[in-house]
Amino acid sequence: MIVAQAVGRALAQLGVGTAFGVVGSGNFHLTNALVEHGVRFVAARHEGGAATMADAYARMSGTVGVLSVHQGPGLTNAMTGITEAAKSRTPLLILAAEALEPRSNFHVDQSGLAQAVGAVPVRVRSAGSAVQDAVQAYRIAAHDRRTVLLNLPLGIQGRPAEGGGEALSTPSRESAVRPSPEAVAALAKVLSAARRPVFVAGRGARHARSELSALAERTGALLATSAVARGLFRDSPWNLDVSGGFASPLAAELIREADLIVGWGCALNMWTMRHGALIGPSTTVVQVDDDPEALGAHRPIELGVLADVAATARAVMDLGEYGSRVPSGGWRDPALAERIAREIAWRDVPYDDESGGGRIDPRTLSIALDDLLPAERIVSVDSGNFMGYPSMFLSVPDENGFCFTQGFQSIGLGLATAIGAALARPDRLPVAALGDGGALMGIAELETVVRLGLPMVIVVYDDEAYGAEVHHFGPDGHALDQVRFPPADIAAIGRGFGCVALTVREPADLAVVRGWLDGPRDRPLLIHAKVTAERASWWLEEAFRGH
Image (cartoon, rainbow, N blue to C red; front, side, top):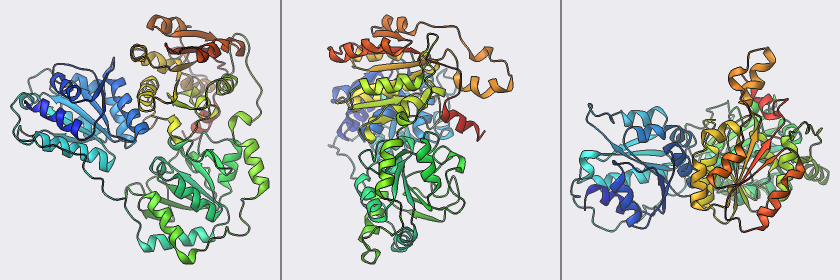
C-alpha cells in the first residue's frame, strides 16, 4: 500500500463518508482510495464549486467536510470557496497534492496560500508519518472547527506506506469548554437586572436551542439569530427571526429597545448589529463564545464569557439563588406576542407591488414561492442585491433549513452551496436562490445538479446587472455601463443542461412550479425570474449606510 492509499483508508476509518473535488493526476490515487474504502466522492465541474459543496455539506451535516484537489492550479481554483469556509470556521479538510520542486510549473507556496486566508496548513512529512499527519489534520478540523489544508507532496504519495496499518476510529471529542463560576455569576447578575433582554444566537449556538429557549423563558428574553443560524427559534412565539440588515421593522425596533443584548456564539459584527445601530445608548452587551479571539472583536462588550454556549446557559439555570420567575416589568406579554405573530415576518409587512412591464416584484415572487414550495426545505442563497428576498421571505423549518455561505460575500457560490446542502439533507427539498451574476459565474455546476439527479429548485432573480453596484453608484451619477448586461435567456441555458425551466414575469407564470412539485421531480427545476430593478433592496440600503 502506498502513502496515498494509506491516507485514504485512514480518513475513511476516521468516519469520512462523503468527499468533493475534481480529480487530477496528483490526487488520483488518494481519491480512488477514499472511494475504495466506502467514501462517496462527488465530482464537481470546478474546484471552486467543489470547495463550497464541501463547506455547505459540513455545515448542514455536522461533520467534517472533505475536499480533494490537484496540486497548484487545483488548489488555486478552490481558493475562494476555501476562504469562505475559513472565515466561517467551517470544519473542512482539504486534501491537496503538492509539488515541492520550485522549478515545477505546479509549484506554489500552498501553505502560504492557506495561511493567507485563515486556513491551517499541515504537511505529510514522510511515508512513516503520513497516517499520523492525516489524523492530526482531521483532528484540528473536527475539534477546533477550522479549515485545514493537508498538503500531500508528490514525492511522498507514491512511496510504500510505513506502519499505519492498525484500525483507526474517530478521535474522541474534547468536552465542551465550561464557564468559570465567576463568569456564570456575573452573567446571572446582568440577566437578573435586565427588564428587556434579547438573546442573539449565532453559528456557535446552533446546538443549544433547548438550553437558550429555557433560559430565555426564565429571564423573559426575546430571541433572535444571526443570518447563519436562521430558524433556530422558529417555533417560539418570542422569535424575532434575524437580527441585522435582514431584520424586519418590528425586529429592529424591539432589538433597539433592549436593555441587554447577549450574543450567544455570535460575533455581533456590523451585519448582525447594523453597524451598531441596533444597540441602544444604554444597552448592556454581553458575549458568550468558546473562542477567546471572538470576545469583543467587533464591538465593546461589558462582559465576555469564554465557554460553550449550551454549557453556559445550563450553568446559569443551575444557580439556585438565581430564581425562576420572569422579572416584573419585562416585555413578554400577550400584546407583544400578538404583535410579533402579526408583524415579525417580512411577508406580512405591507408593500406596494411594483410588478409590471414584463417584470415581477421580487417580494411578490418570493411570497408566491413560499406558498408553493413544501415546508420541509433547505434554502441556499448567493450574494447580491437580491439576497434578502429569498433569505427572509422564504420560511425555513429550523436552523438546518438555511445554508448561508456569505462570510466572504463572494458571489457565485450559491449553486454549489445548494448541492452540498442537498447531499447533507436529502430529506428536504433543496432550493438555490441566485442572482443572474452569481448564477452565470457558477453555471458549470448545473451539470452536477443534473448528473446527481437532485430534485432541486433553482430560482434566478435576474435584474440584468450587478445590482448592488448599480444601486450603490447610480444615485451619484456614475456611469453604469460596466455593471449592466443585455438580456440572457437563462431558462434556455438551464434546459440545455437538462433542467425543466421556465421564465417568470408575473405570478401566473408560476403555475408550472405546481406541476413540477406534483410530478416525479426527476429533473431539477430552474425558475428564471425577470425581477424589477428600480430600487435597491432594503438590506442593501442598510449596508450602504456603513460604507
